[in-house]
Image (cartoon, rainbow, N blue to C red; front, side, top):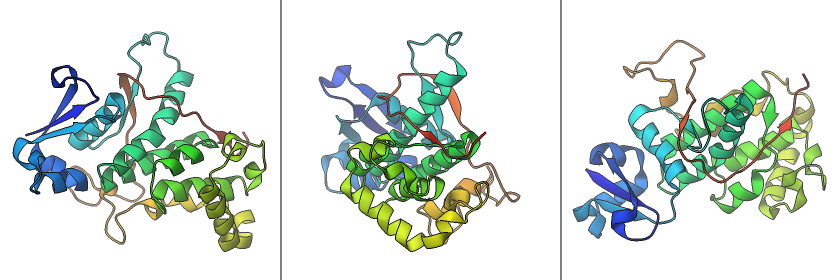
Length: 258
């Protein structure tokens, strides 16, 4: 077994997550490297992650064992008064933080699951996040999937209009790399930006374009027995459970009227 201690302070007071060693190694390059190295973690089976948020890491823990993302309600909210609007906002707030969490332990399958959940939510709501760019660009490495997805949201859903100063939070004090990436994507796409079909022609209509599995089969499209399912599977099921919430990262802008 592997013990993951979250937060700082005395060890006895820190929240501890317990994982099966082989399972954790199979989904995380960071933990796999640590458990097969000469570092002390390999012998003790204890990792201290002082900067990780407990609520966000709990979603990763649930995914490791259940292969599903469970976005969670704050424990201070009564289930009887927690509205659908608050449920929706809670998901928007959590999703970018889940992706950046996946970056730190080098968990590509988890990041793929988060990307698919973001795309599923955008397709269902017809709303795209318009203030994630600064946070994502400051907490990810270049050319990552979520950076590319955010750029495509701006370029294809809004045809670059939201990048005018004052149009949305991403345009207020934009990350220069984000602006450069958006300009390059706009130039590369050319007239296709104005010709895509809003329901089927967006680049994210194929979520695998933003996954890290390359040309191989998408693991999100496998059923419980590991066999390929029928076409157009539902890759993720989101749920809302009682638990602490991460800090707010709000969103977004409607890109299809109605």
